[in-house]
Image (tube, rainbow, N blue to C red; front, side):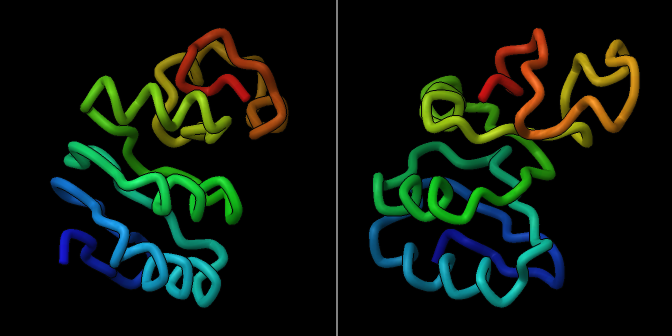
Length: 109
């Protein structure tokens, strides 16, 4: 299994296959404030991406892999203020939400 479930964070590592989508969905539904760490994710099956699109979790760490990052951005998933490089330039935390159009591509929705 390439997903490690911790108390408040699920860490996706390497290649995340279709078999892990249901387990990830269950964890996200049981942990509505849970975050995802995608830093080490090299590839994700589209079923994993569909889970992320349906649930819309926050990310604790964006993917380092450019292809995974492009998928996440295309799906409209925001990295949020915790990991946004442009957050310090935002006028207030209240403006920096999922629906706020940050100038950084990682936060575009």
